[in-house]
Length: 240
Image 1: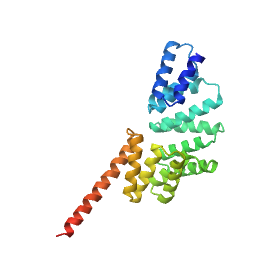
Image 2: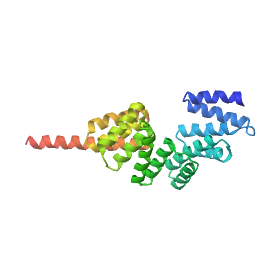
Image 3: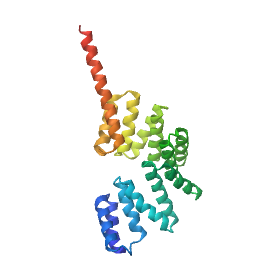
Image 4: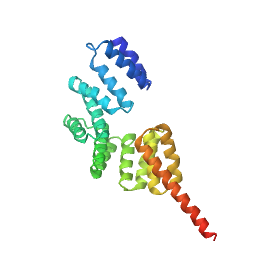
């Protein structure tokens, strides 16, 4: 299985997640009794990358319960925490994150996951504390910068600072749909609709099925339409 496994990992490393998933699933079907945790791990990762959290959790949870590799255990707990948060299983997310902290795993990814989980539960002050700690460890971490900036923007706190953080995150990862969306949303809150339109269109082109991006896209363009209508009415009224 080791030799067969290499092809699946190659596909995954090429970000060809559909083909990698199909490959690993066929590998598992052909050798269900001899499949090791590595196959379950990569199937879970593929599902996660394909935005199928429920399927991803089934496999990542199996790895957590069987692995004897501490590093792999911590990585999978972190993945589960993020997936649980995304799917509203917030108690489970908190459990996994607390397990990580108890094991001494106080890394930037853990801090950002704690920030994300706190924000998802409307604990904005706590979220800001975790993101602050993450940036103290790594001031240039794009995930922490964007997360911190988005929390500030979403709670209408210091939009200028929020924009600075999110723009810095985008410099690190220029093609990130999430970071483009964050900047678009901050511009929207600042009333700068021209800039908001530019960034939300770029975000939507990179991730056209993301619900949050689509919601922001609609809100921004609805406001543009309202403003255009108001401007036309003003011109029309002034000409009488």
